[in-house]
Length: 239
Image (cartoon, rainbow, N blue to C red; front, side, top):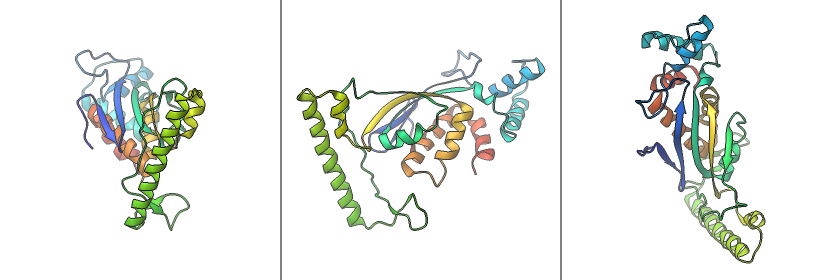
């Protein structure tokens, strides 16, 4: 998983995650983003009426570790994260169950959606041990047949979508030809505590593989900016 210079990680065949901003309440004009691993510790010290008092980083990180270990979440919530996602609709709908995020999504009522749909490189077979999920147990020929049928169906549906638009059908009805694997695009905002909860769920081995790919991309972007905090996240939040 590689990151571009503009804090973007490409995911699946047409998707990506981009970190637009991560910031706490303390301005840091000399940095790309207004954030540091020690920010939750500085916020937490308001309890003792010494907000923003300077301490050694080692002492600050001891306090951040205490906060994460004992689930004192409010100081972690003072760090905000702004992200941009391009992802298949069925993955987006899973993520939008996290109602602590604020979302703003591209509207198929206003724009013509591009001809971009997700075709899995590996087609999973039905799991024999759980009601949902997949296993890498499907014969290669069946995977190829599925990929071709899905591509043909999506290509035909997109052609019908474009024809409907050209015939004067309203975009909000024309888009009904499109499928759950069509790509959508949104920006979102969330505090770091709730983003960590998102990562706990979506990086888990039981999460859908496409969701895990995007969650791992978010995790990588955060590790670049707050590496010590994410090391503590690994220690106390990932099971």
